[in-house]
Amino acid sequence: MAVFSNMQAVRAAYRAFADGDLDAFVRSLDPAFLSGQSAAVPWIGVCRGRHGVREMFGKVAERARATYQPEEFIEADDRIVVLGQARITPRRTGEEAQVRELHV
Figure 1 (cartoon, one colour):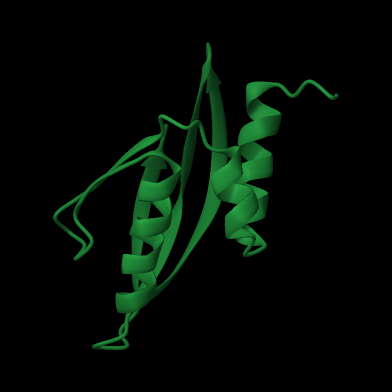
Figure 2 (spheres, helix red, strand yellow; figure 1 turned 120 degrees about the vertical axis):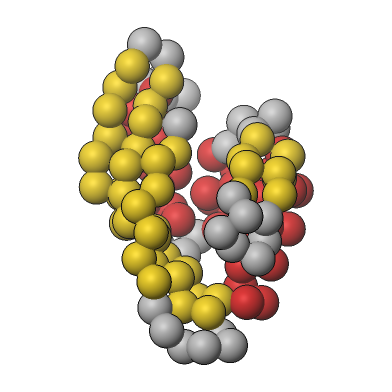
């Protein structure tokens, strides 16, 4: 079995996401994964674990078309910070917005 560095694992997860392979993306997450969504989006709240991530993406898909393009990966000890651009087009308005996001 291959041993991946944190950076390799994170890059592989984002690659799976970019390829539309939600199953591979979700499998790559720690079972205790936690993500907070701001009040700037209608799917506001905290998602916990792999099941929570699937629910959050379901809420996003109901309300918008969304993509995320990672631009920079920064390694800091045992954490990886990812800076990138989200493009979100609400189904209700059809007007695309670009949002700078930071993932840890």
